[in-house]
Image (cartoon, rainbow, N blue to C red; front, side, top):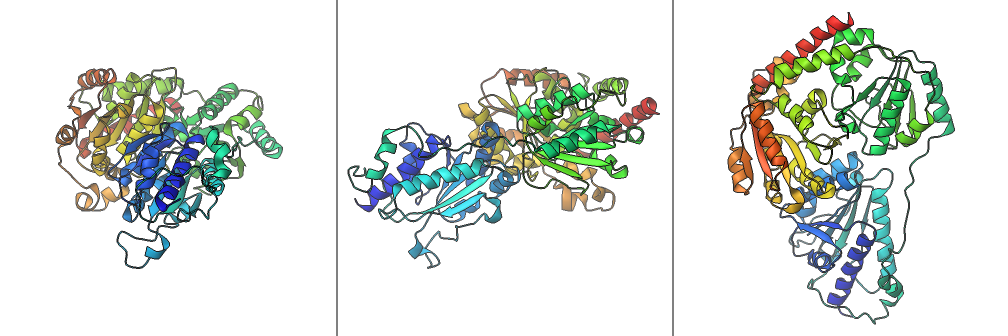
Length: 580
């Protein structure tokens, strides 16, 4: 068997085993060294794949796909800086425990550090951000094919394990790289003939949900039984069963549940927006939780952490399946590494329900005030009203992807969802970057197999603008709502805004590029509604369309700052009225 045949079978086996393990979606960037892998995917009728001229965009697309499906997409690239462009998405996947498999192709041993073109050190390039990284040998009949299958199985297992995350396999190939049909009667092939004849992977694995220990449950039950003013916090949870179980436990015990946008609970009709109450100093003076049970991971806003720092609870317990430390304020007294749903089930009935504070009148007044100040039909559409209207107009069959910075904060604070079914919502909150957002949203739409709305700031849009080329595809129908305040609006809210005259020069990054021209360049529909009524009409029409569209909401950073300050001041005043 010649080298072409060996390399062809090598790559065919790798791709087929990935598909059998459920990792059958491939994000491929064109290149010469990756030719054997690329064609192995293209020639496999069971493979789904998408081509990307930009590896950075491909990486974030794979991340979005994993967010929607829970399964890894497989990235394939050529040698050199191509693999380095995956780094930001690998970091996000690692921090947020998202499965991802990187197959980087490489020059063989004899060309490394010898002055050969397009050659860098690729092995372990992502360092500690991978769950596993491994260098395969160059294809050759001295390597048993069953060991190749076993390596693929282990890669998928590590990517989906606890915690899930990226896996990197580096694959050196020698020329020639063109495919050639292998000799299937060759002795090298004999050990995998049974595998070839079947449709099953070489080995299977199971990843069970983590059961809480009896000691952990006993401690939590005692803590809650003895508490006077408990508070539940629902942070980042990507499992709908976890979110539902936590919400049901809070209702059954009549314990306030602070549901962050990332919990999967915030955009449901029955969610109480405790974020608004915690804006009131009068409320936080009255409601001082003595026990906090925190389910899941991090939060978008500073509430309720800022209030808890002033009045520390006796106990702060964290419940999540992830084995990593979650203790940003170093106040955790108990950590339970287990499924939140299983913990919630074990805590049922651990205390008699008793309402600690009645906020219904306050929330009713706040909702009326926000509607009047921000969402009246004839008022100018703003970053706040756009978030509210999206949450009320989108039904539970669609999905929302939210960029970091101001879009995430507006959606977390000011939404008013109207659907009984929680909206599927996703964000890149692992390290909260603004890079690759359009690409991630496009990958999420592909995995979710449903129309998706993206709320994104103008700088995030600019950062990933080439990803607009992905949106003229049936897999990637996106409604892209660009909140354009001509710069980095978040900086106007930070303390630095009050102590420097260099805000625009060094932080806000003012820009004046044409969002309409960008949309037209990539063949996308475009709209620029000016009022809330116009936005509602435009958005409803977009929801019923089968085309992607860019909807620009234009304003200024100063107006955005003033609106937020006005709303927060009125919320605080209502808090003083209701809680004094």
